Length: 221
Image (cartoon, rainbow, N blue to C red):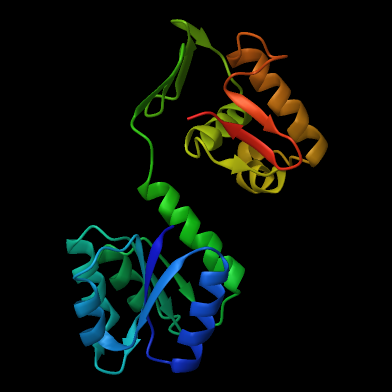
């Protein structure tokens, strides 16, 4: 379970976000102000959500402290001025989201940052399947596997989430705009079939991309 540090001096917002994020499966430690945040950062967190404007200091200072501990940061801000955004990103923030925001949009941003931070090694080897992530090259048994842009994107979604069940809705969200194409639920089935035909020894009995009946798909870790 990922542990999130929430730094927000508005008590109502802090309580609402805590309840929502915990309902989404995250552990949350919530504090108000720079002083409490810096003390909390003596512990280890997977990500920090930091309001830029704090009553007793600055979210920028908290971001710097989190960066020293290699903790990714998403800024929560009511400010829409370019200076605040650029300053935060220059300090090493991974993303920002302006208030008011939709809670589910925030969760999507959190998971996106966590995926990037948990990125797999440049070369991923699964049985006789090798994916050179940096070069965009896929091979099976030493022979090159030629994938379309969308097929490669789909494969990368599975590679970056190995061992996890991915629903069809999650897959569609990840790949629908890749290669400039709109992917429907029906065409997703086609792309998974094509990908299996290219990477599986026996597509009828897949070893890499397995169907989890009633839930979605999982790439074996």
